[in-house]
Length: 230
Image (cartoon, rainbow, N blue to C red; front, side):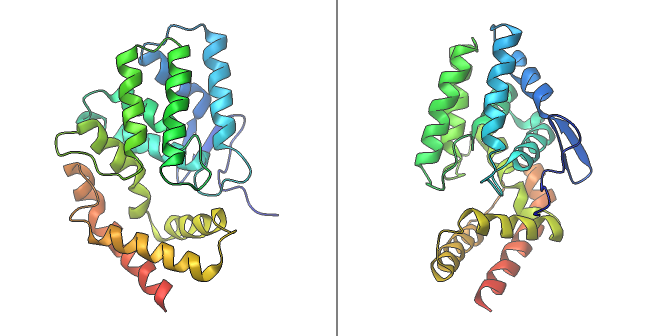
């Protein structure tokens, strides 16, 4: 039996590394902080439906553990955001739809965010910002003055700077999500992604993330690229 990568501790809790997040509670806190006016039952139902997407059995990397890690990343960089509530909402929805179709997945995730958040009474301006940020994760290339985009992008790419054990699990999980792709084609595609990341002038857009993660992320990328060509 495949071990559960989420390492859940009780209903709704996800353990990752040494941290535990209660995602149901975090969802309620995020939408209330964002100004949702819907009643408690509606908020809770929306959260259950959203988490069911993240916990779908076919997901291997883009799962509840990844969601928890991105939320951690947003929390760590919250001081750099202009609208941290919008960033948190975008984190919740950024891979809500994931079928391995870059661009289309982000578009459908953004559409879902707009529908759900509008239905919960989140102010329209914040819904629009969350939608914009979800779409931004297709390329992780925020404008220089886009503080909210920088925070979300850095949180989403934090996995690149993870410790060897977590990075190894990430690499294996990505391959499992693309198990329908022949090995030779997958290797070529993955190598192209790695080279594009390595060629970027900077992986992280906030000063805090660059200082904390840039060197380790580049070492992980270089090692994976070398292994893939070995």
